[in-house]
Image (cartoon, rainbow over all chains, first blue to last red; front, side, top):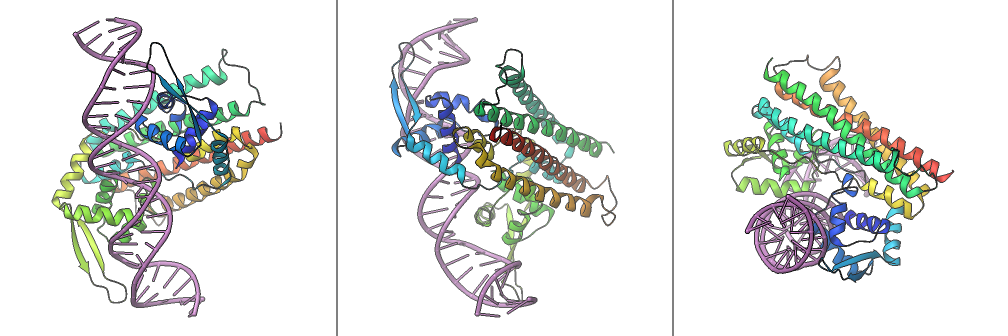
Amino acid sequence: MALEHAILVSLLEQPGSGYELARRFDRSIGYFWTATHQQIYRVLSRMEGDGRLDVREVPQRTRPDKKEYSVTAAGRAALSAWLHEPIQADTVRHELAVKIRGAAFDDPAALIREVERHHRTHADRLTHYLAGELRDFTGPQAPAPDPSDAGRELQHVVLRGGIAYERMQLAWLEDVLTTLHRLASP
Amino acid sequence: MALEHAILVSLLEQPGSGYELARRFDRSIGYFWTATHQQIYRVLSRMEGDGRLDVREVPQRTRPDKKEYSVTAAGRAALSAWLHEPIQADTVRHELAVKIRGAAFDDPAALIREVERHHRTHADRLTHYLAGELRDFTGPQAPAPDPSDAGRELQHVVLRGGIAYERMQLAWLEDVLTTLHRLASP
DNA sequence: TTGAGCATGTAACAAGTTACATGATTAC
DNA sequence: GTAATCATGTAACTTGTTACATGCTCAA
């Protein structure tokens, strides 16, 4: 039930509506957890029912009204309890790797385009992460490093994880392409 | 529905029972896709009903009888069709990263033990993968490299991906530990 | 005799995906 | 006028998880 916890963290960092959360899950939180707006609305309702969130109706003149959620003391306590219990190391689910092993029973060369496409996707993500790092952490416009701002330091280390992941992924996809080309023209 | 495809690939590499598949999902296939025996049995039944798998009852003298599954022509065709359609790049779900960002609202130092535990888990996985690589691909006992054996080459490149992932993960967890220690004793 | 390994399953539930549905505003 | 953005939701379905359940063999 990690979506619940991801929502608690995000709303503690900044209260917001379901729609706003969905956008955050396409950006910063999306570096390490994804969720669609349908999932988010469902979980928000449940968490409000459980007393972990408060809602405030925010009337807006030009846009439809929104429901701004914030974390209650009970929500904070639930997050804290979860932080203190051990979790399992995440299991990997890498669909492209299934395809690569499956290619042995089909035409390996036919996968080259697909792998190139994935390479571009990961290159784009890396560019996006690096731009975010420059903007928020290491660039000249970014606030000065402040070792007493734990939240910011922790956000940065998680972002560095995303960057390391994309770099590793790109290097591996290049290895895959070399292998596929070797198999296609021996 | 990638579990279905992972099962097709695994059974093409070698026919086997649900139990045997479950063990493979703890080892080689587990490098890039995980599944429990409950999931596997459910999907095997469905795929047999769909005509993608054949079953053969194998009586065994000492052990309980087993059902050995193998891929039908229809199953092979389904896999091939899937291999030719594009898939989305996998989305990341990294629970530990949720915890790390959540630690800003709790005690960051309390996470150190947990992160160390994850570091040990990934170090163990890396050791395991490297042993497998030595045994099956690069060691003196391993069969000689054979560029015409596409299956073996593809298995190796996927294993290299697993190794790269674990190495990246270990380096990042060390970065996280340094950050947490800095926050705990500034 | 106790536990590990082999072997297969059901039931209930939680989480995630896809499709459908509405309706306003703003920019081109 | 048409597409994008803001904003919220329902319904149906597929996947994945957890707990329960059985029963045999082999080794310590």
